[in-house]
Length: 547
Image (tube, rainbow, N blue to C red; front, side, top):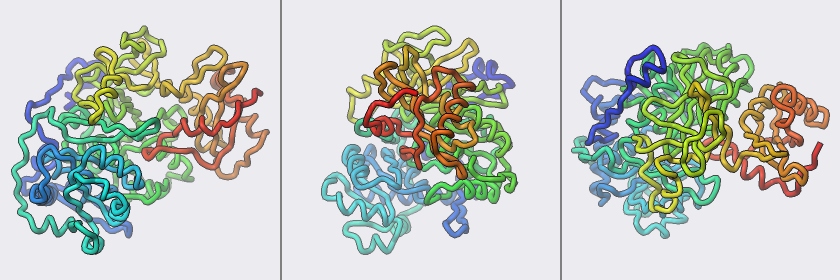
């Protein structure tokens, strides 16, 4: 998608979107590569360390079989197909089949509880569900509330055999022919509903068209060091149920014919991540900030011989400390990118084209118009804090919230989609993430974003993880309060708190240091690893005292 260029400026000037009127994700990322050559598509590592390999030929045949099975069960073009599985071959096959059948995929995070899946299955009116034994147990409690659910497939044959009205996934595939004529979909036809994490209010289903994959490509290519250059194997711990795992790694890699490594960790482990990347000679990876922070805790990362050419990260601001750690431990400059479920990977760094600017998340990805705008959607001058907005139309932009026109309208101001995040843009085009609209702290007349304070806190040797919120204060309106998780070997106490406060006061700004520090065992995180500051604010049962 990106043209060859030596500089960001040349790249931006040469770039032009090429979105065909007819386009199908499943055909693009799988069937076009299935030419009988046995080109490797997927390496799936099992829990015992053994691995199964799948070629594009294998995946084309299997996804065609499942598309036929869906048709046989009464699932029609436009119906929703829910996929309630972790990273696995079955997850990939189900996505490919849904796209090829002209259905709308509904990925569901494998750790969702009963209430979470009930809401999403009912809201999307899913006609089919693919899951495993664990998911089947959760479904049993709520299936009577889902009258539009026509077909259920379980990848665990024994559990499928004992369940009522459930088909064994692999048996269903084996009963079908391995040929299927894909639906002739338009690029603007709906392809996938990805539900927001729902940190505030009920989750909303972001409905995306088939073109969303093409819209992702420039940002993925930029953040992955001009991908697919030097790309042999890509991996991410991010679940494929989220837009980061699905559209930042799996599907863009297959668009380019690059092999994907799949490995589900029951619980993310930094040492295991280093080991996995070393054993498989992973060249490219997307590591969310939380994963990076956990890997940063691993002693002597030089123990592993890595083959990395690029590391991308996004979801929360990284900051100077993690960038420096990445250079030392991973051997590359981590390329930070920015986006959200509704309009993803629109800002990115790319160390091979321009040096990262500390405190900035990057520049607008070619093809995307990103601006800092006021609440009415009017562009603001450089270096002014405002809403991060993306101008439409844009291929990566969602079609709207599923069956929620009011929320869709509220997302836009004029021609700009408002992300709900605050930022600044300097004269060189670097964009700085300030924080979520509701995360910005108002203290003694100052507007303070949590990101830079959290980055500064992480630079203290005692701090493992940190989250900053505003706590009510009679004198200052709010004060900066930091929740801190300590590294092993450090003991919480007033003396350490004062030392950390002084660290921020001298390195950042006197008005931004945390006037209160609370040491905690862990931080509340969304399923995608973002800190839920709303929960932290809710835990403040009384106004914080000033120091």
